[in-house]
Length: 148
Image 1 (cartoon, rainbow, N blue to C red):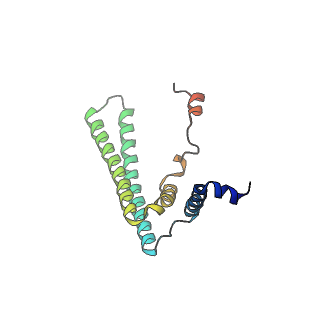
Image 2 (image 1 turned 30 degrees about the vertical axis):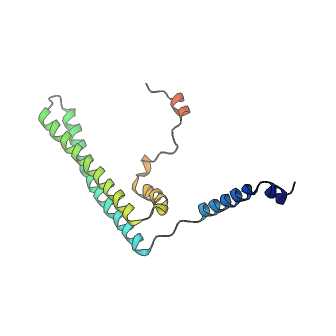
């Protein structure tokens, strides 16, 4: 049976085929590029976020080392340990707030269609290379390495 015969028998099939082709064409179209203003703003956001994150991370590491030194002593100063724990929690909160603020601002700068591409790029820039997952965990991974 020829395509024209199929279409004449089922006219709705032609409509579905045309709609499917239109959706496929839309999906394959690249998202609009960022304007120079958007690009400059995103770069500035990333730079500011990285700078602040670096400062906070350095302070966090120093406070964690201080707490480790405190725990290395037999005579534990509970009050000093609690103060360091509070500082560590506050620095972690600031790191999260810094990242959250960047996420909010990026969404103000770019549209939904560009967001996913930009999100992947930002992830590569902002995630330390040693902490990126190389594979997505699966149930098989869990089965092979059960929690102890």
